[in-house]
Structures are given as C-alpha cells and as structure tokens.
Amino acid sequence: MSDETSEQAGEQAGGSKRPRRLGLWIRIAIYVPLLGFFGWQAVAKFQREGEAADDRFRAAVEQWVEHPPKTIMMPNGEAMPVLELSEDEAVEMGLIDKPGEDPPPASPDE
Image (cartoon, rainbow, N blue to C red; front, side):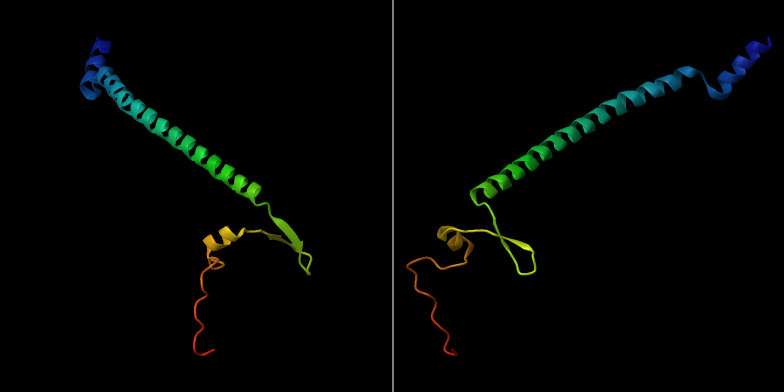
C-alpha cells in the first residue's frame, strides 16, 4: 500500500512524466528547424564571401600582370616599387591633361 500512496503523492506533487516529455518534443520541434535554417544561411553567406574574396584576389593578380611593378633602390637601401602608366591611364587618373586641350590660363599674380 505504501508504494501506491507514494505514486499517488508523486503524481499530485509533480505530475506525470508525459507532460515533461511532451515539452521536450515541442522544444525539439521548434529549435531544430530554427538551428538548421540559421546554420544553412551561415554556410551560404560563408560561401558567397569566399567567392567574392577569390574574385577580388583574381582581379588584383590580373591587374598586377597587366602592370607589373618595377623596383628601384633608394639611397637608404629600401626598394621602392614603380608603376608605369600609359598616357590614357594617366588622363583617366587626372595626372595629366588630355592631349589637344589648352592648359588652364596662368593666374595674374605670376
């Protein structure tokens, strides 16, 4: 009799195990798909960023191949890279004026 009374007292005090298991299954049903979705998005973002980094690296290498740097030695022993630009590239960068254009007028102070 004491076993039966202790079971009845346990059910009254803490309830049965079934609602506890049901809560566990509900949490699993909610959190596993959420974690899967966010994990999938993280992997997709990682792959996109990796591809973008590869594209940037390839563009940098391609630019270096088109215009390989030359180096000169400075008096202090330091090597200084020197890039050569074509006339069109210098015009695009605004370093020189376009050929055939008149230079801007000199200021009257000079």
